[in-house]
Length: 64
Image 1: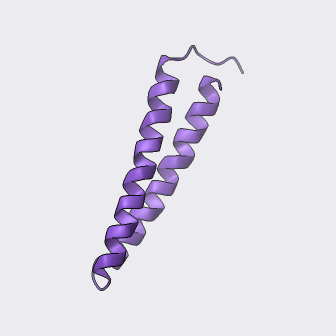
Image 2: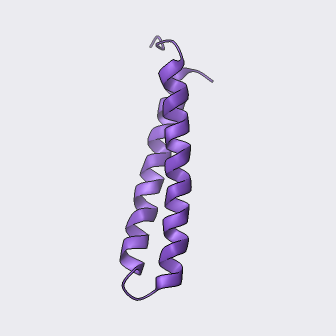
């Protein structure tokens, strides 16, 4: 997998994490147990995004 692919996957993962975090925030008022589930899922996708970004950071620049 090249640098561009890792950057793309990191971007997709952080977008997913943002959506899940928004769900957690919305659920936090009335649905405490559900909010925790959304928050954990958001954290997992954030970890995935960080991992892909770190890998991309050490790979050589991708030629377009």
